[in-house]
Structures are given as C-alpha cells and as structure tokens.
Image 1 (cartoon, rainbow over the protein chains, first blue to last red):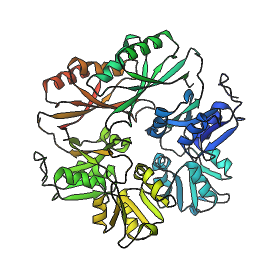
Image 2: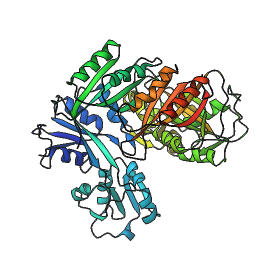
Image 3: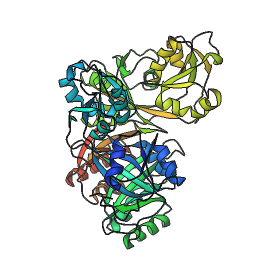
Image 4: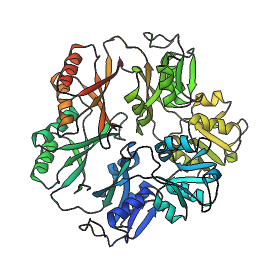
Length: 280
Length: 280
C-alpha cells in the first residue's frame, strides 16, 4: 500500500490495458505494488467496470503534459456516475525493448503508440533513420509485437519490458525529459476533505455572450483558485460546449458551497465530478 | 468562384490530402469548383506550404461538432506565421463505397478513418455486424483500399467515390445527422472588415489564481461576445496552458483595439491569429 492510505484498496482496480501500459504503472504507483489489478480493453470499459461494481476503483489517463487532454476520458466523465477520488502523475519514460540476444543492427522496425513514436522523434532520427515505424494501439501491444519478431523493437516502459521478457537496449529515449501524464482514480464514493484538495466540476452554460464570464466571476468573488478549464462539445447540439473546471479546495468547504449556490441561482447547470487530494 | 469573392483565389490552395478528403470538399466549397488544389500529406505540411509561399492558401480541419478540436491544427497555429483568413463548415455525410458490381453480401471488411467508423457505429452494427473494421489514416485512403479489393467497402464522401471510381451502396450512413466539421482557411495576409467578422487570438496567462478571469473581464467590459475558448498545453512548461479565444468582431474595430490595449497593459501575452468573415 502506498501513500494513499485513505483509499481502501481491498477491492480490484481496473486500468486501461493490456498489461504493461502506463495506466498500469499509474495504478501500481497509486495503490502500491500488491494491488489486485484488472486490465480493460478501453477507457469506456474501465468506467463501465466501476459503474457496475465489478471493481472498487478504475484508473484512466486524462491529460499529457505535451499532448493535452485525453478526449475519450473527458467524454466518459460527462455521462458516468463514477466520481474522481484521486489523481496520479506518472513520468513517461520510454525504453527501447527487444528480444534477448538482439543487437541494434538487427532492428528493422520500431513499434509503438503514435504519441510515443512522436515523443522519441529525435532519438529515432539519430539512431534508426532507416527503420520502419509501426503504429500500435498501445505501448504494451508494441511490446507484444516485439516478443514475436527479433527484427522489431518496441518503445514502451521498463515495466512492459519485464512483463514481456524483453531486454532494454536504451532507457529514457524520449526527447523531452519532463513528459508526464496525469491519471484519474475513479470510484462510486466520495472522499473526505484532507486540507489539500482539488475539485473537478462540469459546467453547461447557455450559448449566449458573456455566459462563461458569469461562470468564472463567482470563483473570483469567493477567492477560489481555478487551476484548469477545458472545453468539449456538449454532444447535445452542434457547436455547444461543456466546460471542465478544476479548482483548489474541497466541495464541502464553505467557499465551494457558496460557489455552487451562486451558480445554481444563475441558472448554470453543474455536475460534480469529485473532490480529491492533490497529487504530490 | 463561390461566395467568398473577397478572397483572391488565383494562387494554388493546399489542403489535407489525399484526394477525396473532407478537407478537399471544404476547399472546393470555399473557393469554388475551378480552384487549383494541391494535396498535402499532413496538417503540418499545409501550414508549411502557406508559410513558404508555395501556395496562396491552405485549408485544414480545426473542429468537429461531435469529436471536438483537432489538436494538431491548434498546435500548428501556436507557432505559425500564417493567419486565419476564413472558415468553412462542411456537413460530414458518409457513403458506403465499393467497386462496381459489388453487392452488400460480398463485403467482408469496412475501411475508414477511426472517427468515421465511430460515427457510423449504429449503421454498421445493424447492417454489417460480422464485417472486420479496418482503421485507415484518412477516409480517402480507405477509398484507395476499396479500389483494390472487392471485399472491402470504404466509408467516405461521395466526392471520394467519384474520384476513385467507386459506387455508392448507401448514403448518409452516419448516426447523427448534424455531424459537421469546421475548416480554417490560412494565408500570409490579413482580411479587411466586412461587418460580420470573427477574430481568433491566442493568450498566454501567468500560472496564477484568477489569471484567466482577468483575461475574460475586459471582453465583458468592452461588450465583446466571446464565442469560444479552448485550452492547450503551452509546450513551454508541463501543466502550463495557452487559451484559444474566438470573439465576434474584427481586430480593427474600436472595441477590439481597447481589448488588446487592456490585455497588454495587464501583462497578458496575446498572439493574433486572424480576423475573418463568419461562415454562412
């Protein structure tokens, strides 16, 4: 069990699989190495496993520091009954993984997720200018591919290397050293205030001039620090949007209660996504 | 030449190819059917062709009414010297395209862009529950694939069907009827006010509480109607963001000038992306 001792991890934890993904790494970092994990084929499946109580928690990526929001996770949050109960930031460190007894000169193909290939662009141009790049649905699936072909190297985590018995020829091959992904921990419960919390809400505004301003004004009036705002299509009408807003504080704080009352009074539709401790 | 007679279309127009994409359709709708078009392999290449003056204009997708922002286009706008000089909204209407003399019972595979397969989920579940779905980099490339295999049907536009000599077995097969994509027209020039314009800017704020509120306040004060706000990673520091803001009016309007002066005075970094007539 790791630092998140307020989270009950006796139940199973669903994550975006297959085995060896960075989502698995996030789940292990959050819940500790003895956590009972269940891999799911898609982000939608992780949400469904939580909603149907097949697992106690779910772990999904929500944002990369270079590539931005993971839209699929945001769209699931719009409809889901699951709450956000935690977050985990993971450093994305890629290794070059091959079958045992393979040398760099044997490598004809480099397999990985499209984003990971892009994140290692300089390394690949310098070291493997001739190799064919093969896009896979996940880093873990690239590792599975490398397992069956000594001419294919995978770009994936050291965890994936250990899981699929691959050797790591080079480590930390990503071009930017501060490449991180933020994961959300989902559950059908709420968390108590810890004194250092963040709250995520969804806001539907009218499609009228100044509507967003009127949403943000009460944050300023109640001195709530808005840390993030993201826009997504509402899915109801073309060109209508919902806003994902993060602010510092817990939903049970007095200032938050005043905020919600003011927004509701102004006719703004708010969906609570969850309050949870800030990632360390 | 179409309705956009203020745009000089004597030069070439680059679009996101290959031939038969919805970007080509957008270029034809904006510039008219006799426009001289050049297809590019990527969104980055369209921007580069405009910046190097290889073409007079570029056409790239920026937003889908269901799927949201096209991040690649937003990221190019952050760095590019090209301006937005127009927008074109295209209804995304998919057809099921096959080789001549092919019937529905011959179809074993359905090829298309991942988003298009998702947009036709109900149609495919009802009509082709057994067919294998093949993801392609674009709808046009799916049409090329259908050209060489009578067992493969492509989901793409009627335009793609005509270009690649495919017959259209079913039309308007997308699940949502109001599925539209907004395209931007890029050039190394500015446009004069028409009386019905929109302005797009990029704003870098400090990573401080209330920073976004202080950006939005002057819009309210000068009665400028903010129609859209999008967030993207700044690419400078992890978890720092830039905001894409659209508002009604032209950059040369008095209210806009006051807005820019106020933002600059408040230490907000603003990049002008362009003023252009609202799409009809």
